[in-house]
Image (tube, rainbow, N blue to C red):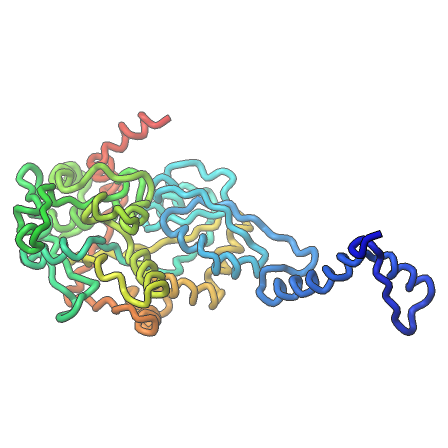
Length: 407
């Protein structure tokens, strides 16, 4: 018999003969493994990755748009496991969530109020919900293009000297560059002059997610409608079609389904895919925080354009079942989950006025990231009446035809 297979003899004072015989029958590899297994169990318990014996884990079924990023975060998942909850996500654009069946879902998490209102209106019971944070809509671009817009007098850097990460964008002037058949090309507004040796003869365009599907595209459409309507929120349904005809030439209709522009923008080919893309501020800040963690510096080639007038989005977590209501309550009350939202670039609602989060700004400073400046022009775009907005979206995106063509 080899040493590996020979039973280990363990002699300890005070053991009965029967217990000694039982201990002798343990193979060596079992005796060696026992302390390791015990150490592993202790580690899991300390880290919070193991629950108490026999505690049930509830799996929450959810449909979520771009804010699913929050629930996909490993730390958020760990914190939810401490409550005995795991969230299983179906990713979909906000408007798509509102229009599709919610059967079998425990919660939904549309990225903005229009889709949330549709969901709340069509359900037959009072629903518990929470709006845990806000995030501004932004236009994500690259430094060469931001500097071109600055030279044209359309954008203004938020910080003088050095490589600012943020610019304020005059939407009235910017809309003129996008306007229909007379739309400018990048070279026509000076891209090749500002960036010696570089050239881009393509049109000045903003790439959005699908207007028919996503909250980000719908919110951007609301900004354009506000600007084209003389800095007024469109309120008359009988004028919606005329306004939609004015706005449609300003929209790039080659958007992706769902809220996936950020994935393309942060990819290695982002600048080739689209010089300007509609995303949310939190997605950019999360990228900068992760980039600084890896490289100990900011990503100064990717910059944000903050539209003036501006729009805030308020994602709303809506419970559809008792399990969903439990998740809503946890998100509402758990201080660690709110702190994690700040660490992921969100402006947590309790920590500032109009979504201006002192807590977020402090966290960015602590981690080497420039803080976005408060816009001097506080003109805020309010979302049009839902019926007006739906008419504009349907016309601009030709959404009825798209829905009929869908399998």
